[in-house]
Length: 107
Length: 122
Image 1: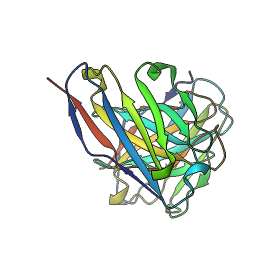
Image 2: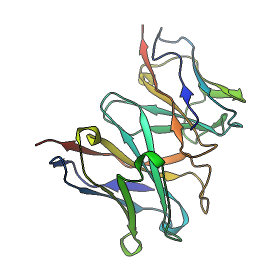
Image 3: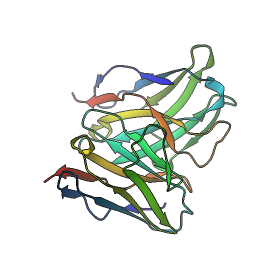
Image 4: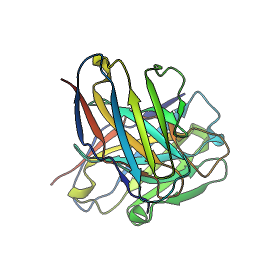
């Protein structure tokens, strides 16, 4: 199984600031990576697929990058509604696996 | 697109429970439906998928003796039965749809149900 590691389980960022969330796969996943946002009591929401493709309706302050084993989700101009937990997911091979999550809070 | 899941369940250890996920707003037979487990305060685990177009199924090996996926095309509903329940099965279970039609593989999840809370307790 491919293990997905999000090195930061918690991040605190100032309103209007920029944050980068990292995700490392235990094997190459060839950009088959998605990012999700989850708020308490809600289902995850797809933000990005294919490592870099922004889902329709997702604000342009979100962006994804990376290749090989290493991927990042960046959020600029942080808003209060961005407070959530963010998960990466590899879909290169089954079983599909998720990172442990990064909880983002406003400083 | 909507995925409407059944309500919360309180079940006894050793029992089974069957969860449902009713799809609407798209052609049911064109997309795989997946199930994902989330224990309280923890991460997400992929359980498996069901493809209504062919009846094909794939399980995460970890769940192959725990979960059974079925579907009813007439009602556009996918079911997941969990057997021999223990406290480790207490979790929220989500159904989710593949982002691309006619594809068994390389699944990302563009649409999710609201989740069903399963609590295993005597």
